[in-house]
Length: 543
Ligand code: SF4
Ligand code: SF4
Ligand code: SF4
Image (cartoon, rainbow, N blue to C red; front, side, top):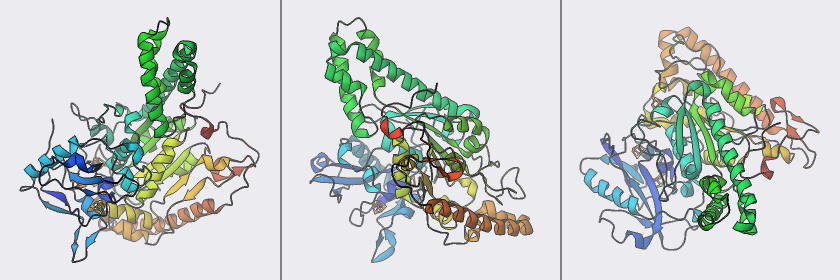
């Protein structure tokens, strides 16, 4: 039991104003405001102050209600949810559909309401649209109440991944902030759903986390292959149809995984009474017939610097792993040292006079392989693109790399403005949003997509709004001006280069094109494997 009770103010939901867009839930770094859909009947014994209204979504069955509820003792009072709320009261524009209020008079009441909220039955996930923000934010988070700083820009990405895939995630976490708030033992922010399923998590070193996660993938694949072999050996006893379905199940989407869980439950029943001599060998590995979603998570200090060799090694292989880089552009947990993700002109430890070289373009380097799904995201700038990227990355049966812009206290502004700074980073050209999807290359389409518009703000506006850049103007004004001018040129050139890549013509389908080096599509070459044609496991181990 660990309740920090650190918020002086907590958000209070205005059910009448709310459009149920889900943005407050999406941005919350601590999963302390959350949504749940339920049949109206389920709330008949609710405390008198518990708020719920009919769900506006036409996708949900008639009679479905929804509640947006705060966990008053877990909220940090950062205010990000209120800042993200797009709905203002027309009669008082300073009021939104969620507003901060002093916690004192609310704590007991909201504690009771949150406790009731948790007793509501979990809504059928198959009835919820996972591809929309309002829908996906009704999915329960399996990462909650971490010890991250108030307003942290990393944790919403992890929470999002657990909402979408948490019941089947294996997580390899590099040392750094995400391993500290991810495993501040004896408590853990990773949790389980009503069926007792949740992410399996472990931490490894800076220098070997990608390999650690690859090991999880190989182990899961090996166990699945072994279980399939045993199923085939016992097909006559188990029933040919069941054996066939277990071995060839399409598990790329959640619906397929749910079906496979049903088959595995049936398999267990049959094994319990089976007289086959290998039945007892199959029973303990039957669980591995269900596809696991492997996530390799860490910060930029890991991915760009100390663990880069391993990261590159894993990207160069064809295995099905999802790599999430929480890019704060500095070593956050160890006190703000420069990393290769630190931008030009930013002040950090070992760069007291401003970082003299540009940030490494990790996404572009990874996309040069051609077989890696790559994307950059910033949920505060374009949340729908972030959600889409998480789905696309997970569905891709090869390596995926998501480079996630993550505001941090080390950037030097009030974290209340976390989302505003993400938007400014994108609008100034500091953080373009891109996607590279190898599946598109297989159809002859251009795999590179530019998801953000041409910069509409000068980079100066962005840099002057963050202390990590602005402090240089006071200590080294000439250098600051020089870096500013160079950063502006870099942003323009980078956007132009991305735009050129995105505007390349699609090739006619069937020409057998594949993505080659440096974003060039090489005629006449075939990819080594076809991710779309496989399900369940990674491509076979190369000979
Ligand atoms: S104030 Fe911050 S921690 Fe509290 S619910 Fe809102 S976003 Fe979450
Ligand atoms: S962000 Fe505002 S409008 Fe959207 S769900 Fe939250 S309270 Fe409602
Ligand atoms: S130091 Fe930065 S990345 Fe680490 S928990 Fe705090 S805000 Fe998040």
